[in-house]
Image 1: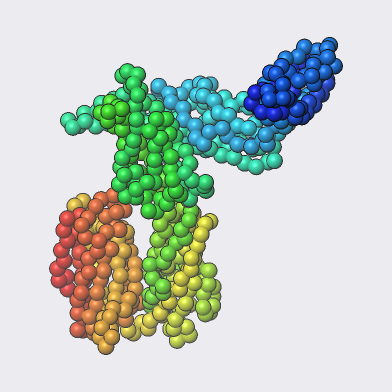
Image 2 (image 1 turned 180 degrees about the horizontal axis):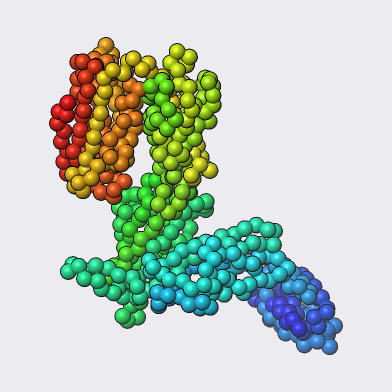
Length: 529
């Protein structure tokens, strides 16, 4: 049953009256009442405040129904049918942008219920099909998330993506966080481990770089437990809030919803450390600041970049397969720790000329080391080769760049003398393996260095490939040792990024040895020939 109400305009307020009726009607009926202006005599015309005769006519014509008449101000058109209003268009997707579930133990047994997610498929079926990226978890059709296989939270938390498909077949995804609120630990000033209070523990929040808008957009609602109920206002501080870059993140002072105001770039800032403050109405702090760590997830938005536009090296004619020639290096700004977006893979995609066979050279896809692949290097036939090198990220499956490598084939007669080197890590007492070296010669007329070859030290700390094939002539040479990258590989820091040793060769027929002794804090060399 529907109750339809209308109001009568007071004759004391204007010259017109509109009559409306309220009735109880069956659902199968449809009633349309149009209220039209009815003249009402004013007081100066001898009228009164009694309802117009048309009112009584309306009431009499509908004597089988119960009516109520009320004062009205506007013209109403009311139409009632079985359907009162059209449904709003359905918008498929997850109800939340992120889901976070807390647990109180490190080991999650099989079948444990973690929580519930909600997804609107906008389809004839009311329930959705879910697919978690981490197969140790499962989500039933009603959105309940449970542990499929036993899970141990080694890092106190785990994060993965959850996908679902709407009625049109479109995929929707959200991040899911599961964290152990009792395993978060912080070191004290005495280097002891102490438990954080439950309301001050929050796992790192992950936001993907280059997320589409519109902005600002919600990130997460922060939950704080207060000792007593009082009116509290919240704020955030730190880089990205009130310190440059200012305004990347904001927080609603009453609801504690954290917002991001613009797309993020991991290559600019990979981690944001913010602090949430709770203050009373008078500005007094009512809670210790809580730290929030926001990690920016990487997207493969950078392609590899070669360290040189053209790489130059040389090799002695007649060199056998496996002989090292030169080293190719390309850098990628994307992540290499949690993804393979920045892991570069090398390949040779072109050789000119193709004589006497293809490929005459091969390259290590991981290190970029070029070596001889086939017999037949003859300076009299082919004095120089040009290789086209491809460097692709995502271990060879992603974005790529190309560069040229020019290899000069040298005459055996030119190699009467020799130049050797040896690098020793004095901190560990073992040879420095994997250290990149570059040999250059000074072009006296132009006053600049010309690179001759580039290679890496072997397990003995030596580098035979650096000098083999290089025709030693009188002049000034430079050996550059990329020590910064070497220490970085060992996960150590050093204050000097490279070491350059300049020396002069007066007799190319002599043997020259340039050693290097180094530690993270110092380096030295001596005359070794």
